[in-house]
Image (cartoon, rainbow, N blue to C red; front, side, top):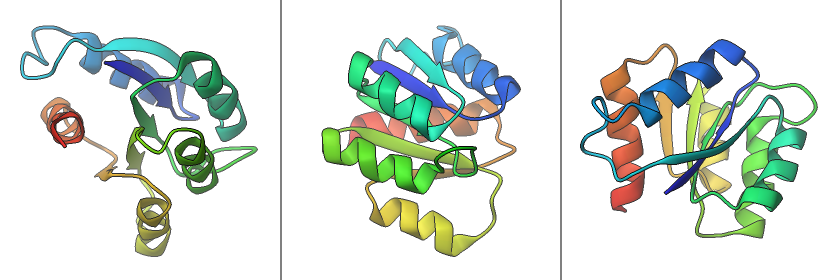
Length: 126
């Protein structure tokens, strides 16, 4: 499965990539290929059109375009895309809006390796 990581934090992008690509950690997951990483919604939309990932991890608070708007655009391009919101934002209304706009899961930062793997596993098993 192809994964795109969207977060304005380079540390978080690298952590998600490390966890998702570590075959020891994610033995429960199918083979995941990371097809790109983006630091903003605008960058993510352009990258999505080029790479067409099946799974996207999406931050909510980013420059240029937030995760809610980006989620809407990505699901308009591909209604089958599985989007996991990963955010430190505790505003439930924003999280609910992202879910209503097509996201299929939500994970709060900070997260453990197991929490991320389990959240991704839930997405791919749907």
